[in-house]
Image (cartoon, rainbow, N blue to C red; front, side, top):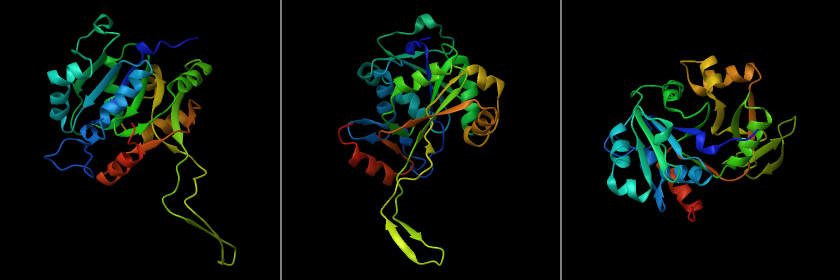
Length: 253
């Protein structure tokens, strides 16, 4: 069994308010510059280099900033964009271009509902769901390999063992300090998204609640969720402090 990456649609979740990052009059964080390019384009270009060339953006909060960016003639030429209309067919996809599907999913629509609304734009049954403000160098081929191993009947969630921001104190039973551990790596990994899944599972376990609080627990309960542990870099950009930190660490990105 093989996967044709050109037939996998990527749903980029970009419609959240991001209130910790920008004011009402500022562009959304996904369109903030990170060194030589925008956060969102770093993500798209990385995935495109690994064979993925169809990206669906369910717009919501600050949707006009995204429309202005993607409909800009300058950006269409610079990034080799092919903008697809709402009634696109597979024949409209261009292999040597980055194919973009934009649609308005609603300002207050949660992530799960955005995913469900995006299903009518996917090319085939398999899709990748990616958070639009997380930067990582996940090994796409390894995720696909695990997905194929389970014959596409399980969903893959990417996990990551994060290092603590603080030093930890180890105490004995009487409360005496035994030792200090400088910024250890947590034993349990965190969920960093990048869900590879067949659309039939989404339709079967459809939920109006959030991905993390409802849909993933449902998959887990039915034994349908498998972890792929990422061991490269990972940065989640939630505020401007984290953006500055990512800029320092990813100067060569």
